[in-house]
Image (tube, rainbow, N blue to C red; front, side, top):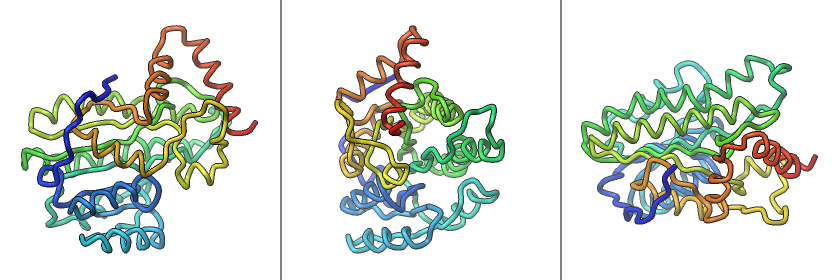
Amino acid sequence: MSTPVNPKTFDAETYGPWALIVGGSEGVGAEIAFRLADRGVSSVLVARKTGPLEETAEAVRARGVDCRIVPVDLTEPGATATIAEACEGLDLGLLVLNAGANTYGCEFVEADMAQVQKVIDLNITSPMQIIRQFGPGLTARGRGGIVVMGSMAGYLGHADMSIYSAAKAFSRVFVEGLWLEMREHGVDVVEVILGVTRTPAMIRAGLDMDLPGMTVSEPAEVAEEVLASIGAGPVHVCGGEGNRKGVEFSSGVDRGRIVAGAHKRMKALRGN
């Protein structure tokens, strides 16, 4: 794990003039698009639903930059090709892979494997395909950045969401390797680890974010921290000292005690 000490100041010349934001219609992704716009960087926003995408795009354009939308389901075949077509001719300097909320909860031995595959495709297959598609352009430029949004859930197993946790663990280790490779080409790579964040997806899931001692981040705060941490990879734990201590604790060797304690906390968060 790495946490930034002296993050780079965001440089629009390095990370612009265009950014691709996957999962950009609401929450953290939308807030990142707004802050990029304020720095003069245009965006291509990707998400499933056209309506929320259009609404966010209009707000981005109102800040004086261009914005394109790509309504596509990342778990469907051909999604990456659709995104690539929408980005054709653009000088992309930044990839932000923000899609990947847990959309399926079930004990694994009772799981619908088609739904399990969607979790894997959304959190592993699609990000890898998108990075493989656009990464060569970044290395050819000799500058730019890749941000992959991770989760504290990826530091230990969780009941009813074991595949999601495992996918996030895979993502973190993959990004660490990518960071080593891409820095040789002048491209910054970071996985930003989120804790509990007050996003629309979290609210729709009905999570109790008012538990005593709970560290809850706001999307706008996370967006600012993301832009500050792009050059501080391979991993940045978002949300302050409480979340960093949580990651350090979750990385300990006493796995039974750690996993059982986290399970108890997660049940409280879900209200059961």
